[in-house]
Length: 353
View (cartoon, rainbow, N blue to C red):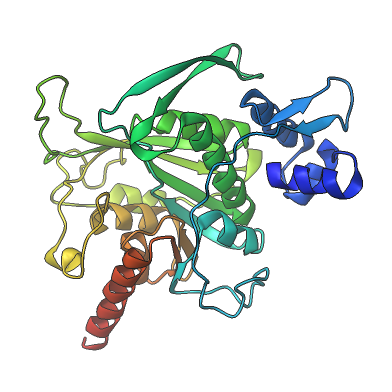
C-alpha cells in the first residue's frame, strides 16, 4: 500500500483518496483503507493532515532491504495470473507478496500459512520508546529483536502486506489458518482485526513431545497457536465439515473422543514419519497429521489450497494426498527443491497402488 501511495503521488502530484486506495486493493470498505492508513501513519511511514481527504505524504526513511527473488520459471513471471493460468499443483519459487499480488481475486478456497515467527534467540533487546499507533487506544512500545533482523514495526507491516493479498485472493466461502507462537500471534490477531478478517477459532496445538527447556529459566513451551479466520462477512460462508470433525479419530490424540465435538485443544505429537524427512527437513516443519486435519475439515476435494510459506511442502503434500489442488510459495530455493522431491516421490508411490 505504501508503494502504491508513493507511486500515485509521484504520478499525479497529489495523494490517492481512501476510496481510490480501497478500489485498487479490492478492500471490503473505505473504512478498511482508513485503518491501513492509520496503521502506516502510526508506524511512521505516512504523514496525514486531518480533514483533508488527499493530504497523505510518504515519510522518507531508511529503506529496509528486501530479499532478492529468483525468476519464477513460469510463463506468467511478470504478469498478472488469470484463473486459467494458475500454477496448480506446483511449488513456486517466489516472494509471497509479489506472487499473491499476481493472483486473481476470489480464486482460493483455503490458505494454510506458517509464516516467520519473528523469534528471539536471547539476543539483545532494545526498547525504542513508546510509539503512538492511532486507533488502538494508546501507545505501543516496540521491541527491536536483533536475531532475525526484522524489527517489530517491519514485521507488523510485512504481516499486513501479505494478509491484505491473502484476503483478496480468498473466496467468500474460503478460510485461512495461520500457525504461530506467543512471538507473533498477537500481531496476527491485530492484523486480522484491521483487515476485517473474522476469527472463527483459536486452536491450541498441544505437543506432548515438545523439546525440553534446557535453561531452567522458564516453563517448557509445549504448544503452538493456530488462528482460523474467514472473509465472508456476516453471512459466514466459510466451509466447515462439522460432521467430519465429530467422527474424526486419531489414536495419538488423547483429548479428542470419537463421535464427540472436536474442541479447540488438539493433542497431536510433533512426530514426523520417516518419509517426511527423507529428502531433507525444515526447522519449523509441521507433521502431516496436523496439516491433514486442517485441510480435511475446512476444504472439499478438488478445491484449491495455498501454502504461502511452503517450506519443504508439508501442507502441499497433505493437500495432494487428500485430493485437493495446491500451490506452494517458497522463497528459499533449497526448500523448493526438497518440497518438489517430496511431492514427486509421493506421486510415484501413489501410482504403484
